[in-house]
Length: 189
Image 1 (cartoon, rainbow, N blue to C red):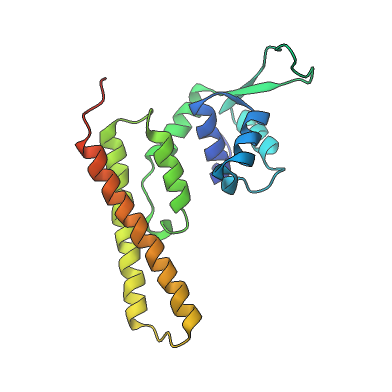
Image 2: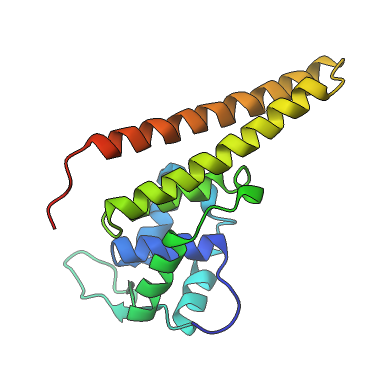
């Protein structure tokens, strides 16, 4: 892979294309009608990001075969290259940065979703343990701040309560997920 690092949106696009080759229109629909829309920086960001991924050699576009009733407009289906698959797997395997765990929590959940059919269970569990450790440290720091801070105004205190509730729930989810995946029978090779 050449050039600068991929943006979070580019990583998500690459991961989605690795999961299932898609046209720009297919991806646009996913962002429009699912909660995935929160990851798209703007409605005009999709096609330039696909072109950047193609220029970097991470995806290639193939002309889709026409189907009855389909528009005559040129439809390109993007599929990952070998380099693109390697870049996606590298992103999925990256450790959780404790300093950004709160800001990147949604991205970590997307990575978790994309891991299911690509990474062995022990790697997924290791990722979840790193996520758990980072969330535990972040939550402990928030709790320490809440105990020491002078929060006499109601709104700042309530906003901090919200942050604590969200991160405690995420921590509980991570621990529960580790337990559930650990207890499940090992998938067949």
